[in-house]
Image 1 (cartoon, one colour):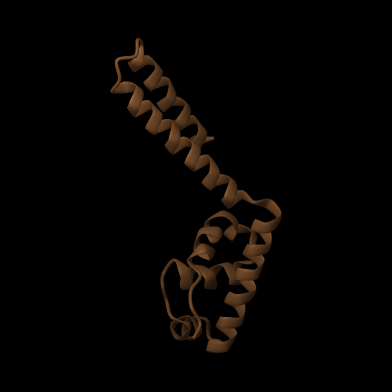
Image 2: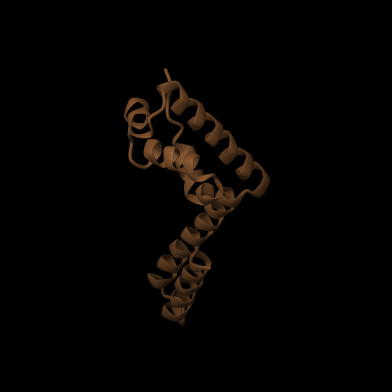
Length: 117
């Protein structure tokens, strides 16, 4: 049985534009639109085995890009740091620390800037 690796869907968000148009289209149909191999084969006018082969090659390309560039992993690290900043901001806002609101607001601002840049 051919099972979906949902981590590939995440990598597709980062590196999908680097793939050739045909491979990118098939991967998006499979992961984003949740179409079956048979449905994709019919729409692309190729065999199910052909679709499976293109998906496997596309997955390999996406994994290779992540191994070399690490953008998805870096994004997740930044996301965790941002979430930690927001937790700290909430704790400070609820405390009796002098200037707690100002400190909390600054942390929220920095967290937003991290994710938007």
